[in-house]
Length: 135
Ligand code: THU
Image 1 (cartoon, rainbow, N blue to C red):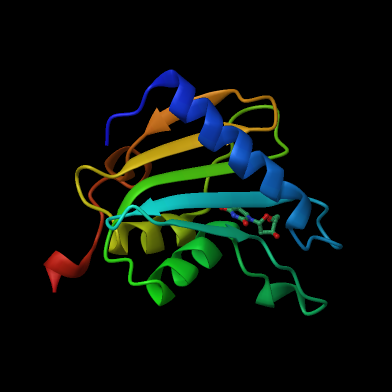
Image 2: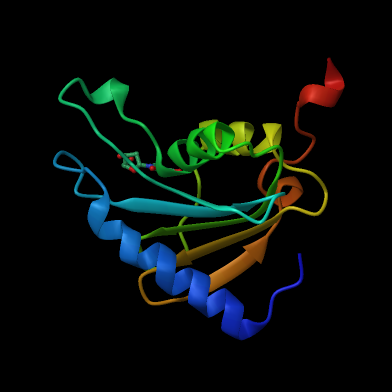
């Protein structure tokens, strides 16, 4: 997926708006994710915490599960943000789940509230990964 700077910033603004929807009474660490699937549809997710802390759901995986419900087969673009000084870094579990629905063309943009961003790929985030093709 080829994106202009203007498009990148507009997706970043859109995902940053989502941060206020995160349910984070315990960590106060909101995360939001927006993805565009292979049909061109947008799916979104925020982290949802729980009084039983281990049941917390990450923003990236919430966006992906919503995507699957909406017929997503592959992720074309994933934008993840947090209220962090540097572009947010997805957790290991999310990297593995992103892998399941990524291919070599999947673009991943990590960003933050100040619109600082880094364009990356699943291969960079999770080198020598295990995926559906390995079974
Ligand atoms: N979190 C995410 O939503 N995604 C990540 O990739 C990193 C961590 C959430 C989980 C928890 O609600 C909060 O950030 C602090 O760990």
